[in-house]
Image (cartoon, rainbow, N blue to C red; front, side, top):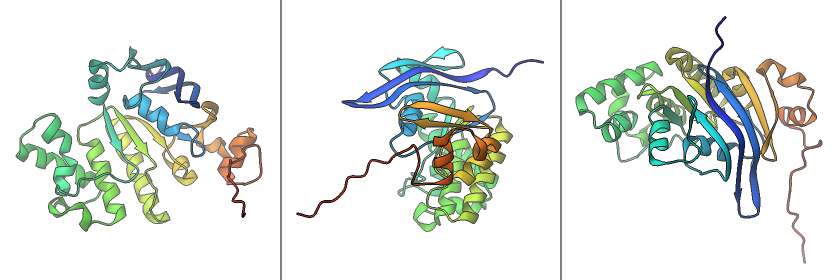
Length: 262
């Protein structure tokens, strides 16, 4: 039986900002066509890891390979190579208010690939249909949409360029439980439909269980656990257990600055 090739491989990744050592040696690999969800507390390094792979943050040490190609040095060619393969759903949707919905969806096609407006609009309307939005939504402005619809538009934009890699940054933040499940289902459906490799970061355990093939937890800049979503409740790791169940008491101690009245 042929082994699934590794799409993204990270080894010994380190990144500091001054005295703040955010990534302390991340080792991670994601097989092609699989969905990995990264969990961890605020400040644990999730976003810095994602930005490092995307080429938005340059690591201090370590290796990042995409399809076996080293991209950690972040040359112009490296960034172009990674960008050409990726689509991104941002935490706050990050839509351009000055553009129509369809122009947002087709932004990369219009301004990155310099495609024609007619063909780009057709592609955008098709992508909107894939996330359950009618063609007429394409002519609206983002400000006319609900939060859930904005997330759908952002997902449509992420898949518009037929990417091989999809990144999801807190895809259900700010949504009610029903709309969160709608977005989770759309993510699962679209990832499978285009055969993309997906990396998501989230605090939402329901989302993690729904969209992940595997889950990895970062704590203090390293991966401390990795397993299937069905193992989250019985991970055998006390830090994972505390995080998943949202317990204040446990091995993870939040640094809280106490206010002292003078």
